[in-house]
Image (cartoon, rainbow, N blue to C red; front, side):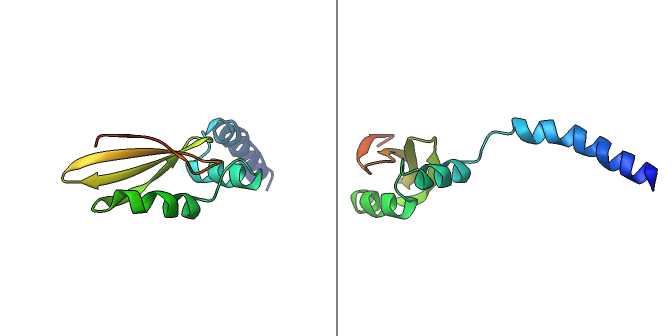
Length: 96
């Protein structure tokens, strides 16, 4: 029993620092930003942007804490749309 407890404690000590160093996932950053009122929820952002991207396939978002970057594909080309997370304002497009 003591060996099992010692092994468990050793594993916890080894894995805990690694977990603490992991970068937060986009969805974790987005959830926290929405909770703090610094960002609109992604579905609201998508409702504002998708009408401007008719004919493009929506591939998904990225989030850095202040800006959503929505990825689209049209005619074999990737298009990135940067959106202010707080206001939903389109900041720019690239790859068009």
